[in-house]
Image (cartoon, rainbow, N blue to C red; front, side):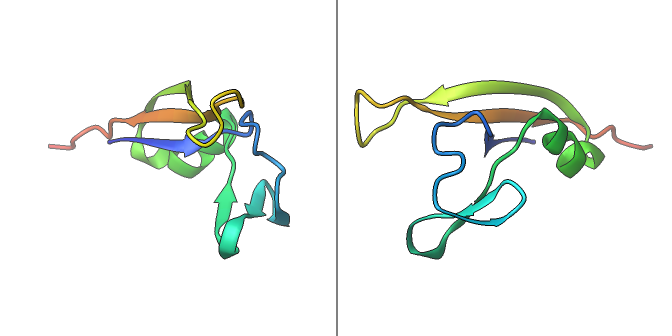
Length: 81
């Protein structure tokens, strides 16, 4: 399983209304939870986290703005026979 989650290192961390620990309400009521390495392990460790890599996606709205930071998470749960 491979997926991304938004990083606490992203420039939009802390923007909007805080509704919980590392969780912020943004445009039109959407909520974002921002992760660090520890919270990725806590949330997805049962799925066999194999790798966590921080990546940066360009800001498509404003070319000169800093990119958004995400964690690319790779999980590999061992198959039991």
